[in-house]
Length: 341
Ligand code: F6P
Image 1 (cartoon, protein in one colour):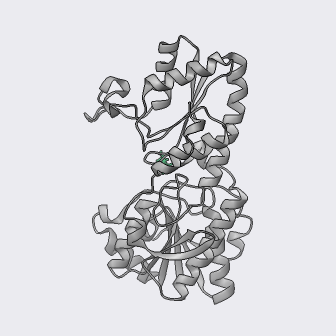
Image 2: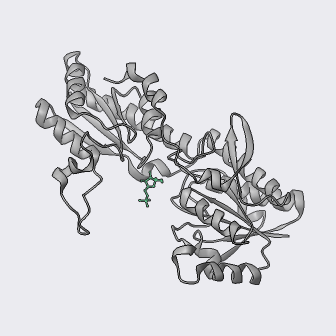
Image 3: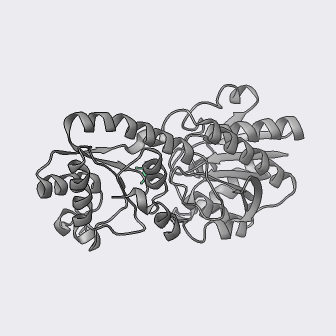
């Protein structure tokens, strides 16, 4: 048997750990051959391959990024994309694919399986917003990086008596903001799930200054002030005529400075949160996902994604996994309310 493996979407610490587990188990337990496809779905569309033997996966466990490269290519959006995949898979005698990715990559995996190409999915995103799994690998690492940044920023904020607004990733879900905010002792945590009142943030900021401590505000990149995107940047439009998004951290820091008269700084953590070596937790989760993906291929169980439920790895339908994004539920925000403000 020959199987293909690919990584799609944004990179994420732990991708190499999954690849290594798939190769190790595929070869050592089943005697399969494993072919890596480069650059997400572009690989099987254009025949971009990399032979994956045991030597190729030596010493990649701790390495960030992906040795296969990634892309956001969607074969359903490219002329003849799916037919090209069919041809390349036949040419390389590939019996099944393991696709490691987030919502978009796994959405393609689902459609390909429906169209007769056998795929098993492995969930990946630092944002932890994929449905049907308790956690995705990469999230723990991102939270650690953001928490360490908060610890470091706190000392400079205190020294300079400044408000510090720290923008973390999370376009649609506030998991990184909530967890790093709790771990790093933020005074205010703002998430996309709940629009925030600037007046209230200012009030909390001033209260904190009154107690002689510098306020630390964690804001997810997708968080919005009350009134929504129109309020950010005074409803300015971009080159395409869409309301300008992004930059909520900088925007909020300026609002705070203006309304409180206190010095305020914004720090955008950005892609730092996706880089570098995965935590032990993410290495274990990614490895277990890889091992179970091979089991699913071995069982001929396609159109499924491996998922974490409690401490067990289970299989769920790709359709279930990609149906809906997993945002932070209201009770998780309420639970932490006492720490905000
Ligand atoms: O989906 C993961 C993510 O890290 C988001 O939190 C972020 O908005 C996005 O990727 C950034 O993507 P890119 O690397 O394409 O700028």
